[in-house]
Amino acid sequence: DTLEIVASKSTGSEECSTPEDNINVVVRVRPLNEKEKRDRHGSTLTFPGNGQVIIEGNDVGQKRSHNRDSVRVFTYNVVFEPGATQDDILDYSGIKRIIEMGIEGFSCTAFCYGQTGSGKTHTLTGPPDLFVGKPNPKDPRHGLIFRSFVYLFQLIKNRKDVNYVLKASFMEIYNERVIDLLNPGSARKPLAVRWSKKSGGFFVENLFTVDCEELDDLLAVLEEGMRNRAVGSHAMNDHSSRSHTILTVHILSDQQTDGGVFLSKHGKINFVDLAGSELTKKTMSEGKTLEEANNINKSLMVLGYCISSLSDAKKRSGHIPYRDSQLTKLLADSLAGNGVTLMIACVSPAHYNHAETLNTLRYASRAKRIRTKPVIMMDPREALILSLKRDIHALQMENDHL
Ligand code: ADP
Ligand code: MG
Image (cartoon, rainbow, N blue to C red):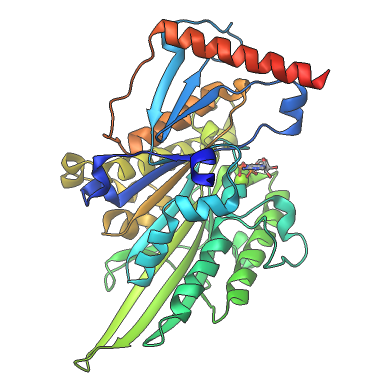
């Protein structure tokens, strides 16, 4: 079945509730695109199953060799291979548990990390043309956000005993400045991030929060935000790869218990499309871009640190630097609380992306050490066999093209 073919899950003894259950790390590998296929780019990744990814090869420009250092194995909760569908991500990423916890009043976050062009926006939102004109709710290309909305409505429609109110906001963080994607005017005058004594958390002052009674209302929020992001991106020399977006769904509920007590809950689900991870190192440029790169660098580093401390009791008891970036300030309640965090690491399989793919795989495995099995370095003979198998496959592909 699909799970076997396109996604492999790590089987392990840690299904029980350990602190590591707070974070789920999955990898999604996008397919090679038409140009990469035409240019006969092979894949730098192979998938032995069990939630593992093998990455092989050297950095661009270096001749591929069969040495021991060029083969690395990483293990995650789930690995989605290039053939995985948008539906597979909904079913097997762990997002359903996040939605269920959001309904129960927890603060949860799902975010996509990866280099520009690795499929973050595709995974969360869908292909770019989906939001040109009015999106069709039935379109099979919808990403994880809309699919989560559908699942959320299915669940709350079944709960006649509880009164739910849904609200949504959509913001962009560009260069440490917060822009309201539902209020284009805020692009000129960024919003302030403040500390609320009352709730004991950070919030964005004057951020539009829209009531969503129907699925259509949530879809309209997504559509409006995507449109404003595209417009802003155009005006500011395509900054979309250099900004983070956060779409938040608030789930407020009231339930009268048998004892007649009113139970009020406020759950939250954040969907975060992060800036391209490649910018964390490519800071050769100057001026504004350097400032941008530093800001992105910092927020992604701080985020990485905050997340890895979720599964590390020692770090958890120490100081966690949520206040060091706008992104982590705004996600702090979710990262520090009892909610669940889902990290989807998006990677390209193409050889010329090897260095960035390796970086993303490392960032993702730092976020959560999966202890189900020790990471095995392949012995050189096995690496050679694997590499030969790949060459044979590439030759077969070439043959097919002739
Ligand atoms: P990012 O947001 O990480 O910069 P995108 O989501 O924009 O990357 O993806 C780059 C391109 O690759 C887009 O044209 C997108 O439609 C395509 N793409 C990404 N992931 C997939 C996938 N899983 N299947 C098909 N096309 C994909
Ligand atoms: Mg994107």
